[in-house]
Length: 330
Image (cartoon, rainbow, N blue to C red; front, side, top):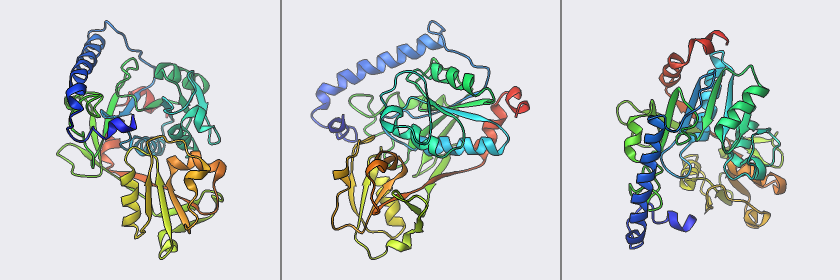
């Protein structure tokens, strides 16, 4: 898949083969959506509101930080959220509760990262409906669900949809899979309740999101944390196995850190050799990478924690949409 991604942000000779397949995929996506709209395929309604956070492209766009921001905002407003996710990269098929010490190979790196924030219950399952049922059965106090990466999971009925767009990469060459990075056509954004742009230019009616952070914690000793200035003048390396590694590398630059960058595919499974840089005084990584590198971390490994920053009008709009029952039981 990684080699194919190189063709998603330009037009190459390979598209003579990929474009017809992309047209077939577009047709299948459209038919599937019509079947749900006409109720030939049915969706499942839950007794609590469901907020969907997703994207129309393959790869990371900033969904996880947004999900954590939403969960924190809902808690501040007296609600009790629960998070459900597919657990991408994990081996588990059936619903599973995710804890801070869960194995990312079983639960997925993003789900473990969300659990480590200790905001609310996190459950995974390839079928979001199963995962939602299991979460609510185990945590009846939850009165709102956030589905991470569930925009195309139409079997789960939703009360509010948020689409996240990578403001740097946008929609690539504009083609659907496999000719481009799109899961659905760009027109799908007209149907969602809110469009969040992660960096880059924001159009009217859209919400800007910035990922901010300046504190690094040591992966081998998480109680130890420092600011970026600690590393000025040192020999630095940076690894990133996320959807858009360049975003992480640019954030280090903005903090005044000049590192030798090592991009890896999204959800990459690290080994100790991937962190072997004898000349390094420090090796930087994202929180998502850190959950997989913890078993073989050394004192050179430092993790940059980032948090999403958004206009509070988004959470106000969501709260207005939530059912009265959810607010009354808060």
